[in-house]
Image 1 (cartoon, each protein chain N blue to C red):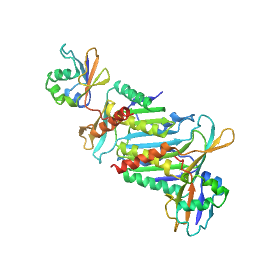
Image 2: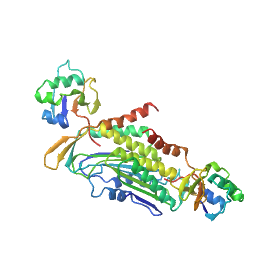
Image 3: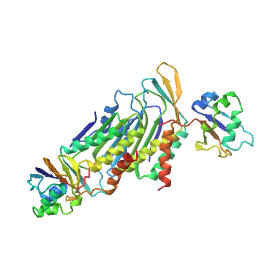
Image 4: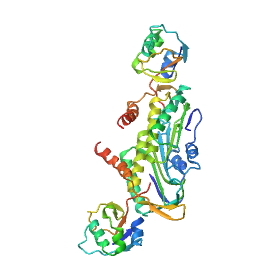
Length: 156
Length: 156
Length: 83
Length: 83
């Protein structure tokens, strides 16, 4: 039921969200999370996103299935782009729909935390001066954000 | 800077969100929360939302200002409808934009928790059989959701 | 001062608001609720469970022990159910 | 089995993947990393900090102590930075 896509082209958050709710009267809350490419103070020309084809879809499907086990969701969308993405452009979209707002919000947060730390994507910086910058380093804070959910599940 | 509106007419989440990000390259995350009217198992013809004109705007502005103090936000939208709203229709919209995803997500959650418990709106049910149903009762779980943020601030 | 009522408080009292002139010994929100309750059956019904009633003084949420002196508008309503 | 490399692991090794035939005493992901590191300078550079390297066996994340027996594809990459 969930929509999972890995694609080079842009997505439209609004149409993905309205596809989830169209004709339904049992959904009380829809959350969309859109992750965008930042210019990082103007030094960045683009981010290049590399991914592991095949595993990317499978891993996101596992994360979505996990979210569907944890929260009563009436719809989930997870779309992740790859390739060169300019500042201001979309990178990732998560949409969650549920009867209850806390389920929709927590599931969106969970999905983003897990996509950050488990989905096989890597970002390389391309700088404005034409040079190829560094690979973006994984952040400790993202690991900790994902670990919260392990604790939450253990503790009830 | 924040967009705060109390209105009878519907809103368009997508255009509110894109107004926040348009022409900017410093925003890394946009979260939209849309609250919709549920049919409650088919018994509901509509919800009628009463509000306290004047105070509704002021109280939402206070809640938004509080969120802007707590998180580094580059944009906030809070729109709350009043009047008769049919199942499947929009009731409330919150949009948050930030450099960082956790700020955008937490601020959206905070705003919804506080709107639920502090914004002077009341919902009355209109039933499908033409009768006027009950006033929706406030939920203990919503009070507890809002109280989390007090604890979070006290504890650091 | 002006009193305004919302949701089932409004329905039970049967009006959206009115000018009120409480005596000088009515100093707090809670005392005003007790004084209003004595104005008639409809008020007694609206305020039968005072703990449930929320109040705002000049459009700001207040607790029942807050002083009403100087306020132009006081609002009474049930717990909010927006969002 | 097939080994595939991503991000700076791929750049350092200089290829996206290759068929590998590790000897029988290479049983775990960690042992495979050590064996690959000995294949040449570029591998030694890619795997110079083994603790940082993440691995997936047949497209599923695994820790370094997991047995590689029976796997068709093993992937090596840095910590992920998607989202």
